[in-house]
Length: 141
Image 1 (cartoon, rainbow, N blue to C red):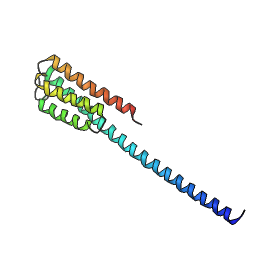
Image 2: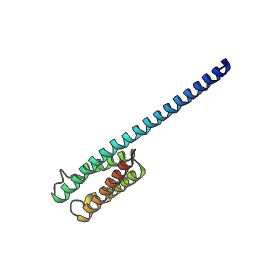
Image 3: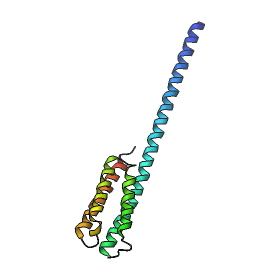
Image 4: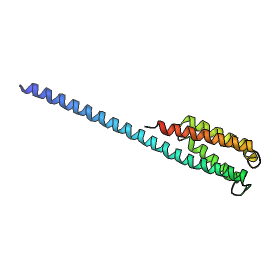
């Protein structure tokens, strides 16, 4: 084999090695970015689920126990706001359901203590957010 052929094979090997390294590095960066995004979505989703349960507890305490100190609407407002804020870190479906929950809370928070229909509507809105979160979590890579 001549020197020129050896040089050509060497250059070809170098080019393929560089291309392979760039491809591997690009994939690694992309995978790390997707993993970080999924981790943020999971963390926000778990926090939303915890706050949904707390909101549900406030609603039930106000309605069934007639305890407006533990079932304070102000605590509910804080939780609804937090759920809405955290939902922006998930996806559009969850964010829409969380906004719907916020609107539902705004329309009926003062009726929760004495109207079963208001409790049912709030529970339905909470369940819709919960279902959307579970679907989102199941779809992550």
